[in-house]
Length: 431
Image 1 (cartoon, rainbow, N blue to C red):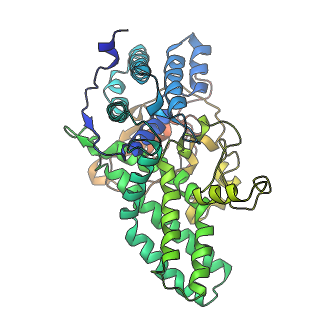
Image 2 (image 1 turned 90 degrees about the vertical axis):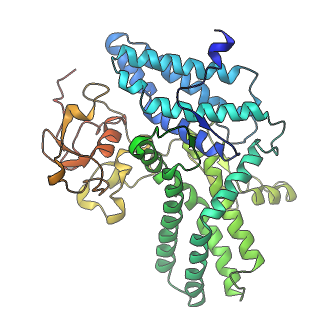
């Protein structure tokens, strides 16, 4: 492979100009992980007809993510050997093109993959130009974390201020545990919503043209982070609120320096979600990995021998959260659903068993038809009324095109069943 080939720019021109590019590098890899064939899908295709290209694509992406994701943030993308990142990206592009060509799916080559690939290539290009020499450099792990922290602090300023104002009367009036639990759920929701809006807008991506027509990838990014971002924030939120509440109970004003420091620490913990240590890529971490606050690490250094006692400050991220969702959600027992259960968790890849029936790479037009504009109702999954609506062929239930595409591209045993009535899109005896 020539050097000219390895450094070839993608068709879509994206330019990053600041260290927050780590956000988009993380999101692009996580969405590629969802979008491209999994190891299970590659094995299925190979066992059926000896088709090797899905394996090649899966292995090419896995090599990139292993080189990128690191819970300790020590061996990161900027430390690769010269040309190593170029070679891995070139291989991914070539293997994916071959994969889709073999499937006679030229639209996929020019579609979401190219956009996601271009985002990560732009991240790689910026890191290669900057060549960070240490973790504290502007484009080193800590430098980029600082930039993400600043961006989130600005985006969440009003949300955090409103949260503090709502917390004061609860703590002063000694509210019930139920009231505090409701408070935490509501304000985690608000924090997540504010971040999802920033991600969906994609304003930080400087493009030479509109390549995410209709905002499809932006919506996919927002949906992709909805559940894991909430879990990530939940890991830090309760302890922060307890600390801030005690400060308020002692008579401190919400502008107190200690309270401000705790809010800053909470936002920094949230910023970890968009770092080399992102839980979005935790399936590529070593087993038994934990993420600890910087302040907790400092305390651990001061108190030798306490690291194994487990004082409750450590936040664990399970690489494979087998029981992360309630059982009735995992099993789709809709009669037991509560209002907060009606989200797209039912299509989340990492929490469901992968038992596949039916053909691979099914398009929405194979299982549904477009609903005429005059007859459009709300999507049965996300409630949207503005997206293109599709009518399921086998049962006539209606869902938006984005939700149906997400369902069909997710590798689990419900991908070819109606989300409302569980009618099968294909007979089980179809190979």
